[in-house]
Length: 257
Image (cartoon, rainbow, N blue to C red):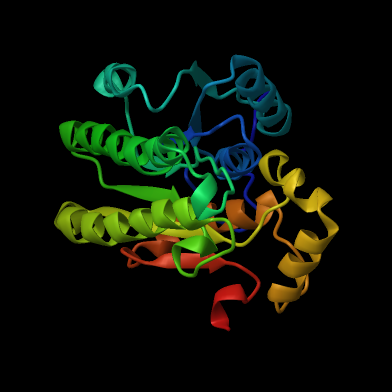
């Protein structure tokens, strides 16, 4: 089955570009990969769960007629990540792998803290390092997109560790934008509000928490993965060529308050 050059409804074309998505088996990673593939990109999915990666790849292939490459690995394993990017062609990187362990201060153990920071900060940093090395090796300009959170701009109950990790992502994004700008490599974040995903679904089983979330979003609704993916697609393409070191908040107005 052949596919048109670009299937994007936005008019953005990424034809001939190679886009890498970590957390590719998750809801946001999968939606982002689909948006990039529809725009014509050759997509590479990275994630820990091979079955989920295969499912995402099959779903994307059913829409665009091209099956993404899949790489089942743990992004916190820096040696494996380094090996993967040795011969990679990279134009776009989406750091979508992430985790959260909601806890009050007294509940947090060192292992919990390390788990959140290892995935959300350390892995994102070193995957970016390897992707940039690949861009430099081939003399390619590119776009690095960090999936951050509104919690990288505000605080939240039971999220001191998670907020800390996302504020770190926001900070390193700005610093990297300054460092890499002269090479034509842009670095930005997409910062969504609560998105209805497999990871957050159990949180919303608590009626009081769901009410708190919806009451804090002026638009009165939670985000969907496709809302985040639309921002990712925009930042990946030439329409955002003058945007770097910033954060697109897909938050329904939460952080405007």
